[in-house]
Length: 264
Image 1: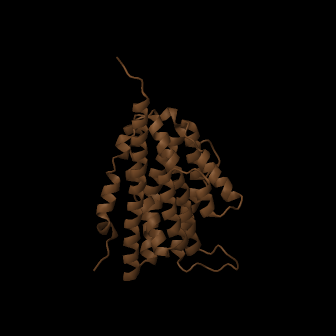
Image 2: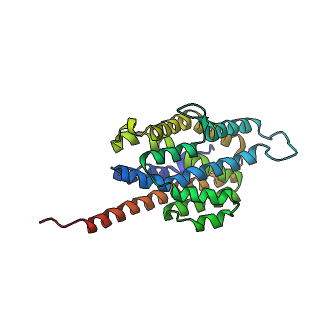
Image 3: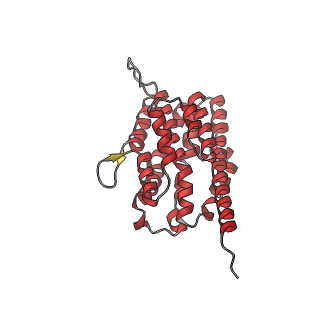
């Protein structure tokens, strides 16, 4: 009997893609709040990717040939695109730095993330850095779940989080956002480039590559069941993240309504 992960996670995927958050976002202030949470997901995406690269290639000494050569080739190609992509103005840039540039462009607060990054660069343990910075709660919960998988999960669990929770959903999730939000693309060129680049790369290159990696190394029934469970968990975690951001938007709107001057 063939194993169809997509069928097993159809409900979780449908729930995520129909999330009311994106329909609720209507102003630049709303986009800023979303990005101030989402930047942490952009960062921990690379944590998943680097864990997979570590598992499928040799990044220690002495070097040894990879066991799954196709998977090694494909994951290295994905890393190249995510870690050193083409900058719209020339040169190269990581997608995280591109996203931070997009945040600066629209006036979103990058302070909490940059403080978090500075702590990591200073050698502060990851768990301590997460508690030492005023990170939005939805982002902190999401990152904590991702890191648990990246640090302690099996290869197939990490692959499921990476592919089904990120690469597979991004084209559908990001497609048409700028039009839906009625934001002039010319006024936010970095954000426009980031969204379009992710849709293009994940839909045409990285998503199919990740699926080929899974097909090559996840073959045993026990592995497949683990993959499916982790894929569902990844989609639920993303849904919970969006729930948290939506609640932040509602709370801010309620606070603004309370502070608004009464009209006669």
